[in-house]
Image 1 (cartoon, one colour):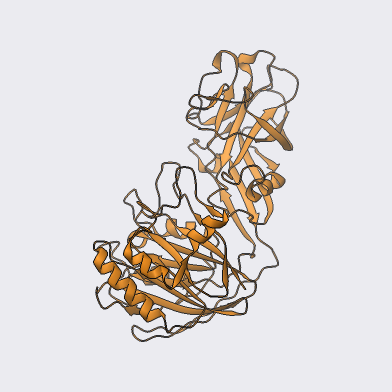
Image 2: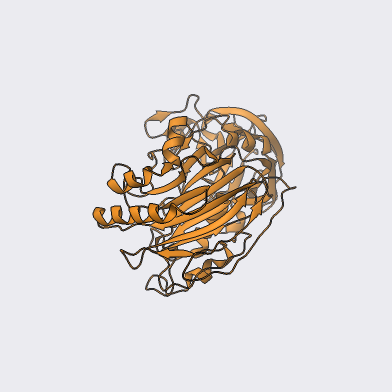
Length: 458
């Protein structure tokens, strides 16, 4: 997956940081298809304590005998893939029939009010030691119904646009915006009402449940720009887009795309970048022909990014500062990215001082990001705080800093990745978010978590 932008990157032997300007407004129409559905069956009666999460199907059945009654439960990650408040134009759930009784039945798609743990959820309990408020799932509003026939392999769709819109707005729980769906056969009891739909454990990917979401505005336009780069001096790139909201993403890529599973996968990392809908991407550890990947990563990512220039930090040969200048919402924005030393607090302070001294003469309005390799209480951060405001701290004070369960802003072992903006700039912080990039196996595309700040350009 590729960002619709153009790139020119410098050809340094080791590029410590890359700065990308994506001039695609966040309002442009986009589509994503979510395939990890955390699917399981809730079955009553004598099976009310049995978990079915490893089954290749989810089941429904209407039966007067509680032991035969079944409901299908699915959950899609619209929390980390879509920022809160994203405009949703359509959302469609598609399931595939795996087995069926002899009757055509009508299934209802309800919003599931309560969070659940797929691996332990049963008719009685949603999580280990935590019961549903109502056995069989805590049904919220019903959003659609669909007729399910008897033909194995047939596709069934539900229009869940209104549900996903409400979830993404944060109407149910702004702190956990997952789309949870309970499929229920509300018809009369019948031995032939049984339906089985393939789950996300099915061997064929094409049979698994999907949630297809279109978001943004179809009237949005995409503009790109390019500029020549150099390996010394200071040149700038220029890109213009309408609107006053600027989404800035900072992410240490772990040597250009090494996940926590030890696998090098640039597409995996790029896919996540697209999901977060940044206007500007600031990346660390984009390298050229090193032992990590042994690729010209600036060229690999040239389809993902747009333009960098850099300044080598005097006190450490493999550390640098990248810079670009854009025009956004009628304001000039100077974008600066860096990566400070991981080992020495003394050297970090020296480098932070060099960065602030070098940046002082750069034009306003300035945004500085990077892996600073330091927690907020260290001297190098205090040096940066003299000249810049920490957008996460500002968002926290406003109540608009968002992370996920168990995380309070940590981007690795603590909060070491920052998005700063210069004091007195024509910028204000709307929100800041640390994203949970774990897949269903707990694997992340980098050993750092990305942080994204939404600015209002005033």
